[in-house]
Amino acid sequence: MRTPFGIALALLVLLPSAAAPDEKGPAQAGPSRQELDGARHRLEKFERKVELARGQPMKLDHDATEALERIKKLKEAWPDHPEVEALFQRARQALEASEGKLVQIEPEALTYRLNALKLRDRFAETARARWEKCLDEVRKSGNLLEKALPAPRQEEAKPAEVIGKFVVLEDFEYPTNEFSDLGRQFCFVGSGTAGYYFVDLAGRPWIGAYEAVRRYRRLVCSDVPEGMKWTVVGRITGIDLLVPQAGKEKKRAAAWGWIVEPMAIWVPDRTFSQVNLSLETGGSFAGEEEMEDIKREMYTVTEVPPDVTPERLVEIFATAIKEKNLPLYFACIAPRRHEKPKGRSLCMYHWDWHQYRFSTFYCKVLVGTAEIRVMKGYDSEDPLKSFFLDPEHLARMKQVYGPKIEQAFIETRAYDERGLQYGSPKPFELRRVEGERWYIESYAQPF
Image (cartoon, rainbow, N blue to C red; front, side):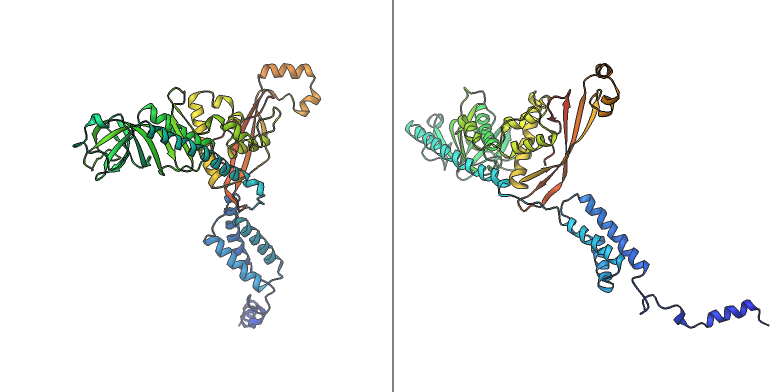
């Protein structure tokens, strides 16, 4: 005999399947919860990666592609479903953001690059004139070795007949052909069949001429790649048996070569530098003496105002780099960072790095809003304190706490000529003491 519970259980088993319609059958009013949650989970992963990219372009990985494909299928099957529409809009925003943040690049944003070309052409004219004058003077001296290569053979030429002569060495490649031998540095010109010249890189003459070329690259035109072929004018000072090969392990045979003391460097269509040991710098490049007067015509900013805001100071800093205004660059940086030779050298290293990136990777910098904090001292300008406390108390607290030091934290974003963000936002730290002028503390990281 069946119990009432057994009869009820039997009825449930015998109920037709129509009472529980298939979730994917015609009776379904929308996607299943599993489909929605699966798409949402993958979309959230995609959104997190986009957020971490912080505006720079990123490639779609597996999670991003899977999220977009799932949401696409949902949108095609249920175009009016509210949850599907919400996922679709989020996916669209994430996909747009993954392609990089875009801004409008106005024509004036590229003016500094056009000015750099104008400067290059203007200084190149002066350089060519100085180069031709140098060649003319060397030829007129009557002491020029007319044909540098093939070099005079050591077995045939008497050293007294060669030493003291001037030589013009084309195809000088530095640092490609640089080498060391017994602690001395040279750069070879020539070959085993044509003979060698060893240009002395250890003395003051080379330093004076080369550093002048470096100043030209830093202050006029950065388009002077290392390794390009230059021409060196020098004086033969001796002959030596050296191994013209870089590195500690020498595999080449030793070769005789004429030692050359450099006098001038000609960088074709760029600059001409000449040794002048009476100068503190040891030499100069063509047009260096009037360089600032020429460049000043192209400056858009020439000084930092005393009441400059942190945001404006970072903008001026970027402008100084783009326009190759070195004095303005140093005026933006905290003096203690460059008052000593080591600090100034470090600033110049970063100047070179900034110059390269502005000429190659990006052309526009947008500066965010500064977040200012009082890091040390008493903030007597706090509006609540100044409302409740009397001036005598504020003055006393200021004396007790010591000088007020404020720090400002700013993020910058750099954009290329297409208007696409380059890299991630970069942090800048600025400092102000006792309400005086703001200075940049961190300048090492490019924009």
